[in-house]
Length: 111
Image 1 (tube, rainbow, N blue to C red):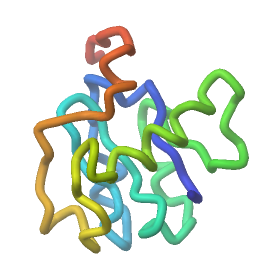
Image 2 (tube, one colour):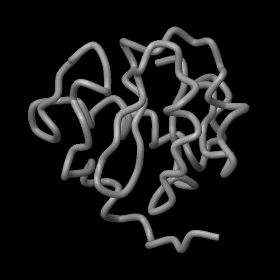
Image 3 (cartoon, helix red, strand yellow):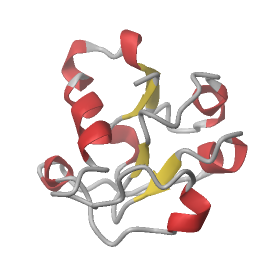
């Protein structure tokens, strides 16, 4: 899993990362965005595009944010979104659910 979206994206979903991703591997859930671990090519463009500094390289995740690696990975599983590996977020469109771990995160206000 090259890059991970963390809690700073929850309830914000700015989308700058989505627009610049060359492989369309950033998917939209109800409250946050998720990077597909098998589709990400580790280019890092999303990191510099994210205005909320929510995206980290997996190997540089701060310990207190490490659980977001599993949240991003597991979001695509049958028991959560069921997306699997659709090969691009544009074709999948927004998903009306989130990983259960996101429900545990406090609501955030934009701005």
